[in-house]
Amino acid sequence: MSDNYRSMWTELGLDLESHDALLGVLGNAYQEIYLSQKNRPEGMAYFDFVMSEVHGLRIKELMDEKAAGRKIVGSYCVFVPEELVLAANATLVGLCSGADFAMEEVEKLLPRNTCALIKSSFGFKLGKVCPYLESADMIVGENTCDGKKKAYESLGQLVDNLYVMDLPQVKSENGRALLQNEYFRFKTAMEALTGVKITAESLKAAIGTVNAKRAALHRLAALRKADPAPISGLDALLSNQVFFYDNPARFTESVNKICDELENRIAEKKGAFPAGTPRILVSGCPQAVPNWKLPFIVETSGAVIVGEESCVGERGTRNLTDASGQTVEEMMAAIVDRYYQVDCAIFTPNPDRLAHIEEMATAYKADGVIHYGLQFCQPYLMEAMPVEKALEEKNIPCLRIDTDYSMEDAGQLKTRVEAFIEQIKG
Ligand code: SF4
Ligand code: SF4
Image 1 (cartoon, rainbow, N blue to C red):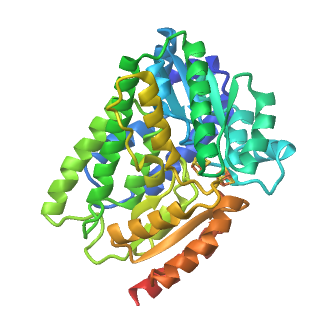
Image 2: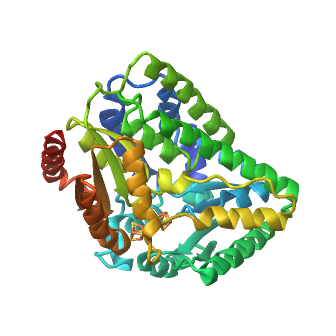
């Protein structure tokens, strides 16, 4: 990464030494996990470039946007509606939280038995290594799981621009009304941040932009139904991860270009792995950049991942927003309808998620499901048990794992994943 970026990082208040260390680890991991893959689509060169410039060019673009008066909003959850951010002429970036950092400092503020994702979000702040976090004019937290909602009380002491969105836990009339009220409150907050009033025109355009990037990922997902799978699970996961911070129009164009290439690969029966390779659906907690541990283990153990039932995956992007409304109110209602369908495990009860897992396993012709839970994540670890039971009743093999971001259990996980793959080959 160019040295020209160092002054930008300094201005953002990053700790250059720690940041160099993070980039070093990230670069090595990317080399070992991504660039060592065989039979990659040529279009993945775009994502390789994005990753090589993840703290460089993209941050420079955000800084240029800021210099031109545009605001940057950071978020930790797919419930934060990008449509409202864009319509207020701001840019939304996901704050990834996919690696351990500054853990000693983190454990002074959070109990040890907090999930890796929450710890990571604190580690990136305390270690001063995340240029996205530091460039954000507003950081949006949300009351989802207990871990997050209590952690935001502490995060609020570390940053001066935290906005917390309240989210329903039950899908009922009251739950929907709460979501609607919260989205109107967020709309007002966005307008106050940017000084730009959201109009029917700007909202329609924003819905179109976000729908287009989700539709591109739907297209990519559908192509993974082919056998041989035309793209590895690692590469498809990367596209889902980059979804959160790339320029939306450029992202859509790049994913569609890859899809054109994948269609040709399917016609030529060319795959990332040979035809007949065991097919796995991963379901569970979000896998944020650079958390590539599980797919790396799976895809170096003789299987291919064909879908992610995850917020960094289909749960996050599943539905489009109806753009046919003519007024702000009609489009706000459509946005509420769209997000209300997200079946995060924080909802109780949450039957839709189970239905979606079964649907995806069938649609992607998965031979088995790996339920990916982060240690200490009560919502997903609790749901993993009924999920496993229901899948087994349908004769869909399921492997339940709970892990964190460290590589300490990589050997043990590999042994379990290999045994599972042998079982489904059975
Ligand atoms: S799993 Fe739940 S809390 Fe986490 S990003 Fe998804 S919707 Fe938000
Ligand atoms: S992984 Fe689980 S515990 Fe961690 S933030 Fe998400 S829902 Fe909460």
